[in-house]
Image (cartoon, rainbow, N blue to C red; front, side, top):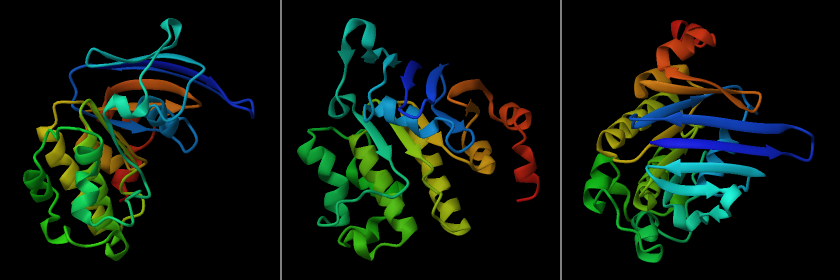
Length: 233
């Protein structure tokens, strides 16, 4: 279960009031125009940005409750975050990148290392350095590292944005396998209607700094004009 309400006013005068709740869904797609507040929501949930006010509860754990002075620091939220630009440690090989949260963050991975690299099809990459990886390989390694740190939530912020169609489909398949094994909520931020429809039964639509709708993915896509994208893909 995920329940949140965040408010923040930015220097330019724009405001966010993001409020939503999801129950019983393992993976939820987050859709909306650029600049609508999707990444801001991810940053609030991960503790990377402080709201002016807010409350967030994930499976009974209070992440934020500004009214009562409660705020978990990012390292204590146990949230795995897959960024658009990978963010791998350049001085560590693939295996050590994946194991970093376990060794230094004292996390117990929910999916054992050997199983994780097999699910994500990266067994042959373990001795490689990040600079030698393709975009698709780096994004799969980034997902593996996020899963090593995730204990309560996994957030993927447009993970296929920089990938070609073949690599995009490979990563979507990996995410589907991960979702089948995950006991915690996964937020999948995307502009791609096809990916949302393939991965998520439920989607959340954000526009103008607000959660406009949460519902069945096909219904959300239809109401906001996204099914045309699939028809002409």
